[in-house]
Length: 341
Image (cartoon, rainbow, N blue to C red; front, side, top):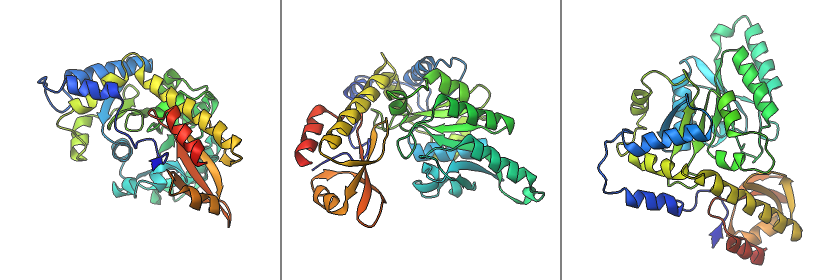
């Protein structure tokens, strides 16, 4: 059986593996002091038109989310998220485990609305007892969202404006950022992202790396002695070269954006395939996640033949499932899917 269950089922892009093998016997310092880490950070800054930003490499999404939130807000503060946000639903309470509450607001196709955030903050500070409550200290979003939807430039600008008004950092989870930026239906550019977000990360785990997330901080936002904080959280990799080499390869000659575009192209072909076969969609998306509405009998027939994620019940006889493409998805994979459908 083959699978479209998620976008990290395969290992790493061949050029990433080649780079790891080619550099394997070269002696370099540990803990991020190697030459590839430094090179990768410079290349990421260039790709996002952010020469003065700070970059730090971590290994995984949940680790990154919990560490960034814990390091940037005060012990008495929480983080605002859509109720469908990854930190609120699929991270086993990792943020709460650090002592910070996730303050969930209703989502709009997976997204936070700036007006909702503003209304929440106004209501919070209008309450004379707010010092007895969890103070909102950050806004968390993801791009793409859990529903494969994308923020527009105007939506990001509106959220950024609210965060600036209330002196709160805007944090963007970019586990699938490559697929968001490569979408044919987005007006958000790498440079705009770096301009509007106080901190965001560039996902490698789901976009061609074995593992790794590159955190990008606006100037002055990275906490003092951040490496020490990373160490305290058990997130520091002794062989930091593992991350440095991978991101250096991904951001050489535009590889990261090239392979992200493959996932988008394959997702469009997949969407066309489902339509030709008469399947309905739960939600239209322009990213690598496609949400299909299956009759339960259809789902039972397909489940032994192809992997997909069960998302949510639509009604008594229909279920929403997700098919995800990735940097590695090929036309041959889609041909196999067509035979099964």
